[in-house]
Length: 148
Image (cartoon, rainbow, N blue to C red; front, top):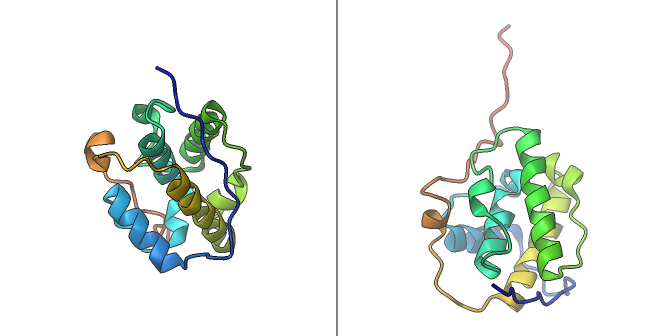
């Protein structure tokens, strides 16, 4: 199957705030993100690529229940491969995203929203079904707490 090539974009001055972006993401992917930092696993970006460019990645390989850096690196590797497959020219600041840098997370999501808007063909997509009924783990707020 031949894949469509992506329209590359640069973020323009019409940037959306994090609340607008999270609302869009939650509606699009049937998720419940409340903070940008919860996107650190890369799973949401992988699923957005699957929506935009079906066949650009194997969604069954995405670690939706990721809670560790290794799984996140795996997800971003899948995303990078999908980018190359459809001709996206964009650096993914993986280290900063995994470290939950809010400024980098906002900037990347703003870019991805614009990229999505330019490349979305408006087809039907069932996000929860596409990821096998799995929720995208929103566990970035969980940390080990030592008992005193």
